Image (tube, rainbow, N blue to C red; front, side, top):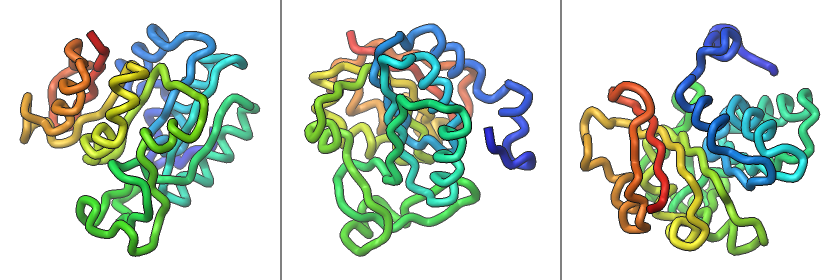
Length: 210
């Protein structure tokens, strides 16, 4: 795996998000269709590709060009043929969105304010899966604070396909149980929501339909 030592020490030592790794290894099954929203350089994409096997599929979305290039290199280096790579942002609406680099991440200038003004292609998961025959079984979301927008853009997927969701919630210390990402989950009947690890500013959750 191609890494930047300064930024990715946890990957090297095998201590990166251990609770998320444990959940993926426990729940993701061979043959599943998995989605990695905010794939970064492919740490979880590779783990998911291994879990689903040759009969499964992983669809990985990463909007930031330099991250996407490394993501592509890491998939090629590991020889996986069950991964579809998309150089796109996942949002509530499909279109074009301007994104601001923030370290190795991307943050929109403001929610949807720059749609249609050029920049990076964006797609909602409802639109993406309406155009193909795949039905997602598992979705991992790590989008630097835009998780509610991703969920609002996958209402049909949540209600009809019922995938398991693992998601990083940003600013949880600010919103707590009123975090905006919880609303679309609860509207879709995702009542089994549990924290993964200690509650802190950024916290991972596991969300499953009733």
